Image 1: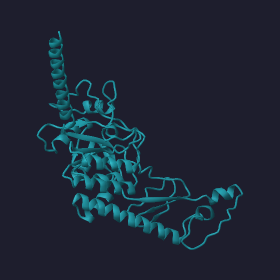
Image 2: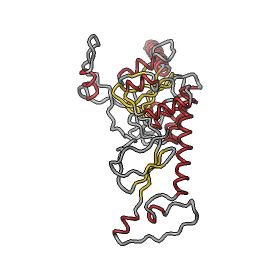
Image 3: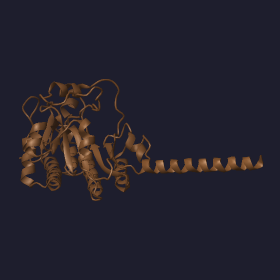
Image 4: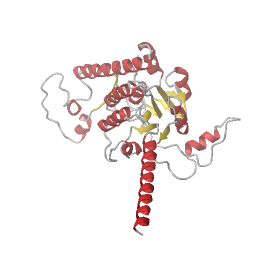
Length: 339
């Protein structure tokens, strides 16, 4: 009996050790599987990329997004990233900071794709630093230059019988002007135009260097905007027009790996049938193109933030273009763009 019990114990030990080795080997294969990771620039809703690199869902700031890119660059299993810039909404400073992070990521030899259904000035500046700039076939590129608006309240205060008593410490101290004047002083106008000129130069030079284009060509792009998807492709602003469900295939074609990488989608796919974009795609399908697959619902719909806004404006609003002032009131035409 003692010998039989010893034999049973030995066999149980061997079986347990075998299972442990198999489990470790399987886990190692899973961890070493190559992947392309999708990262939404809007991190307010978290996402799978947060979990993949050990971030909590509450972390959604610019520095956290840069940290995600650093971790992805250091991760040997991550072969490339797809940045989703849907809806725009970045400031110029944020776009410049993220562009440096994209450059650092690409310096590791890994490709970056930027995809969006809408590019404004800032998000296009960021996208220009990627290996490929992709746009939805139903999207737009709103690259139209810069402008500034200043609201004046003096006439409103006069109607209310209120007089603002403010002290101005110098000619270029314009904080009090909206309450004491009905238009910009020459000094404030010159200061704001100089600021716009400097930002405009940063925008043009950043795009020109990243896309390998001349400065004058980029200025012509800005003067000719905004663009439909097909116009943007023809002018060379984007490298391709794709629907979101093509991103896994497109991204995998840019990476080199012994095994086909897995595409890690950042957002959980919504349930239900096809959405609006899929239905439009089906209606626009050309003869011979394969029909929309049942359950192919991988497009995320996001509200767009059209930064260009209405071309008119309320009376009492003063607009400044990148090279001069435009003081039109409501309905008097579009603001002047930098020429």
